[in-house]
Length: 453
Image (tube, rainbow, N blue to C red; front, side):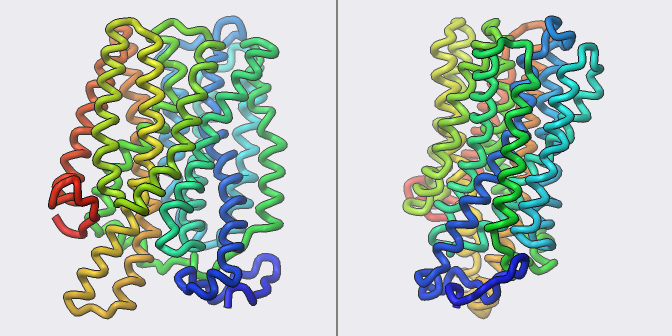
């Protein structure tokens, strides 16, 4: 039984079965909660380092010898987004190869490299763009943490609690986007907008502390070692790509807006660095807090139903941005963007909840067709873990797409982000069509995920 297993440091927990109600109540819940808390801390600092450049570019000006144009700054914030997305697949696999505790320690400690480099080079006037692009790319390792963390935590919780647990894990990590904005606000408020190195310096002791706590208190679980066929099966599973398309719209929006918001305010309304950082922390904060709510709602009324209405609201919120930009209304623009952050957070939680729900529904169909129940549900759990990683990676690429869309919009001579907002609305409409056609075939009021078109 889980509660009776004594584990030496580094040894995996044996016979772990979160679906065993007795074992869960006798101690499994406490083990899962401890690993969840430490996973959240690791993912939080990972997200902060990943989005560090969204703050550092606001400091870059001729005053400190780093006078880059808007296109170059958007490229700097897009670079870690792309790298972080690409790293999610190997990170998701790594946790199954090396163990949750072991990989969390490594993935946290390695964050010291891009943080130290950023702290050094932002103090060097005249540093060329390629140097900063290289350091920003290295910061992408923080984005990879999400995949390994979610893969690991999914094994600790029974399916009935996964929406809430995965929502907390991801939401706590997403808070890193708001936290780094707040730290940037604090630095500018106290010492001005010519000391970006202080923002990076804050994270050095945090990274060390979290890595040590993970090494001390986290567990490796034998069950997390996924069968090699898991990712291969997920690649062949059509729902992998359909849900990834939806996750581009939710998580891609959250991380893309989180990276770009400050620069958008500077270009759209001429905001100062202090104003930009002061405005930008609230949206990511609310979006992070709302992610567990999306998982909680999905646990109760269905992930597809929540996601459908959420995308409808995101389209309306983006339309508000176009109206605000045309009217030059900063207040309306801020309200619209804040709503989009909240909605993207809810959509993140509900879309991720769809993964185990849809695959479990497909397993039920297979059982009805004559397949052995144990085999069908084992496959569903195995493929679900792999889909979590793939969808996370593809979704993060949506953040890069958003930054590239803003780059094109603000460098075409118009000085307006409206062309980008129109593209975003079109994508949200596509997501609505997919959900309605595939997952809500009997109408959006049903809310039941189905495994067939």
